[in-house]
Amino acid sequence: GRFNAEIAPVQIPGRNGQATIVDQDEGPRRDTSLEALAKLKPAFKPDGKVTPGNSSPMNDGGAAVVISSRVYAEKKDLKPLARIVGYAQAAVEPKYLFSAPAYAMPKLLKKIGWTLNDVDLIELNEAFAAQVLANGYALTDQGWDWDKVNVNGGAIALGHPLGASGARVLTTLLYALKDRGLKRGLASLCLGGGEAVAMAVEVE
Image: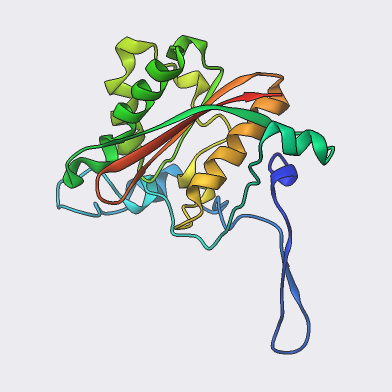
């Protein structure tokens, strides 16, 4: 039930006239085990470490957020979940796309005058476990703290619906901050073509 507040049930019409209510993520798989995961074959090269077990599934899904000015929100008597402190983009050679967040996040932090030590929680899209590990390793000397990262699980457990991950990562970050009574968050993900985006937020 940890994700209930950020999930909007969707009704899917059935062929027999009965609708199906989709209100849970497709993952995680409760029938898996460490033994089963250890038997999975490498995905990209014979001696590789990336397997279907440490990669995100291509789930169906959608996500949406509403962004407005503070003036508009106050005029309409809306209470924001958070304010956007800043955002940044970075790009590397396409073959190194999974390392791009390690460039986008420091660029953003410098822009807004924060350090990683000022951040309460981080949501980093988890296309592959190796990708998250590589980004964390690259930022170790800047204060990377694994206890702050993907505290409710990442895309390996929750899935990686194409075109929805940016809003999903941000939404999960906002609710994780709110649930823990924390304030500052950092969201980042890599994109096809070698790019990455990062956004900093403060819970209201």
